[in-house]
Image (cartoon, rainbow over all chains, first blue to last red; front, top):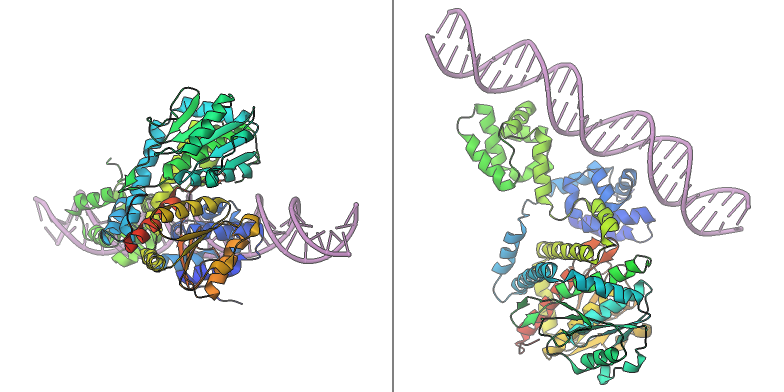
Length: 273
Length: 273
DNA sequence: AATGGATTGGAATATTTATTCCAATATGTT
DNA sequence: AACATATTGGAATAAATATTCCAATCCATT
């Protein structure tokens, strides 16, 4: 009989050891506990089981797989190791900042903060009418063309991935070597253009080509001053709060995934991204 | 009847209010709990009573003096206050099914919420020691190799973009056609691997190759169960809160940009991303 | 399709833990 | 000192929680 872990680190190590080759429910338990280790001390089996999406008895069994006598035995480990230092978000951020103005931790605090502000902003500023229209247009599209370069390219790759997972056909135009192929855009398709200042030529060009063919265009862009804010284009603007000269993409990505999932749902695609 | 405190601060305030003019045993309870507030979440009445040197029933009575229905009621305050985020994941999922699929705006609200929680989580859980080490390792690298496929590919492209903007040499291994080129990794380089469950072969392979050559590896990954959580790898784990079966990248991207900017700063590169 | 073994959920049970109640004790007042 | 009132501890009960067990289901193998 293998003995039970006696430290939190040991617990994680065992979790990894055991992870391979585990039946479905047991795996769910492992994953949930790995992600929510800190809840173990303050939850009941039933609560954890629900969180993991399994029956209480399954969670019970998992404790034994881990080498404990039972749940209480496992919980004891976390209750004694329980470190009170779980201050709230605000003080935690302050702590990160204290590690020195130029330290990576302080920087992380800044970006986290900026991200939260950007998200808040997004929730308030998105025009839900336009969002609805965008989803509708994309749902009916035959092929969805996605273009974005530089910083916007990450967003484009993410959208492309998300759509493909839901078995929605996409073409990712990656402007590599300035080679965008506007001729690939046909009647019945739709275009998603992601562009931020300075608005790249390639992207705008593809947008124009699409408009000339009466293909609907959805744009994810920054301010209302963006060149894609014209009639006919379904422009969704996101303002990211920046940290110094740098700008993250938290809000933009959230908008992107929303778009993808909403379109997937509208098409009745299978879930599971 | 005075109502019970609903926050930890409120609890302490009430404790002070009540402190004057208390019989002996009640006073003992008050003092003990003031000193050991953090144990409340993880103890039984009996344990706390023993700690305070009183009978369990006395502790019980004290809970009522404080305005709670009983001990469980009081404990609930500390158990929920402790774990931020969303305990009842199940109901949220149900909500999503009900309204999210119909209205893109509601879906957006979900993702925004999830993003904010993920960011909070990130601030709480990042190990700043590992972050420092990662930045140090990358700062000294000759070329930084970046690998990530599927969902992680967006993160990889973003990192690649950010580094290039700061004129830091990178190679983006995009596993297209399963073609990763481990031989490109040389002594003096460093690797950033981004991988989430299910952990892709290509990524893990590149990591192994790098380790064989004693090239430092920084990993951005999901749970502590991830296979990159082994010695020698500087693993930064981010747990994104998911919306139904979908998971955004808000927190992951924030961590990525932090890494990039911190490395840039450490190298004294010109800013401007 | 049939078999065996693994895996699972739920009902039944055991255990722990919270809560109430009351008799015993202490405290203060006259 | 005698009384009334407040406080206390412990035993009895109620409730919550963990744990076990078994029948149903799933899965792979033939």
